[in-house]
Length: 236
Image (tube, rainbow, N blue to C red):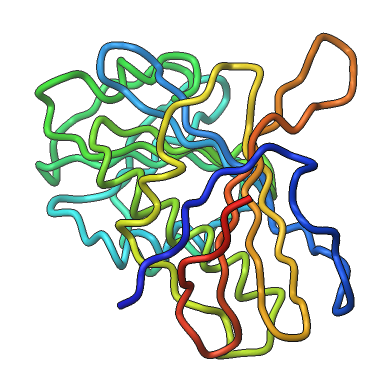
């Protein structure tokens, strides 16, 4: 499989858009260092169907527990199958455990204490929190898990914008270019630019300064097209 361009350019130095459709918003995401070896992946829009697909592709050994707080606390962790995830609604919190049937003590919410949910050496691969219909966060100590879930989310959101079967595949290895943790005030914006002869996927780093408008400080451009793998692009 061909690789994706990870060419970096400063915003405003590239060629202007000519012809085709206007750039389409895909979504926003960010990977952050939570400390003590724990990573988080925030993404929007995301839903239970996307996370279910990610779990089918990861297929971690063990079980998934529904640890969604009820009446202010998780009263009982319930094992659920991957097939059920897509049928569930927000708010939803899920935790992987390598030992099905084991009791899991939980804080009121995963986001309040992710290190408690995924202590080092526990063997728990990930935790997922969906607080509303659009915003979700994944926690994991395994960079490969973060990469895999990010790839699934990105592919699924792009597929919703283009005709069925035309979305170029995104090789997992090329996602390394956007796996670096960001500072708390930054995120990555993804836009799809479908030009007449080529498609571009622009992944921009945006930084918020107090109450001002977010500023685009850097951008990666991936180049591909319908029914073709993403390929190396241009350098500006």
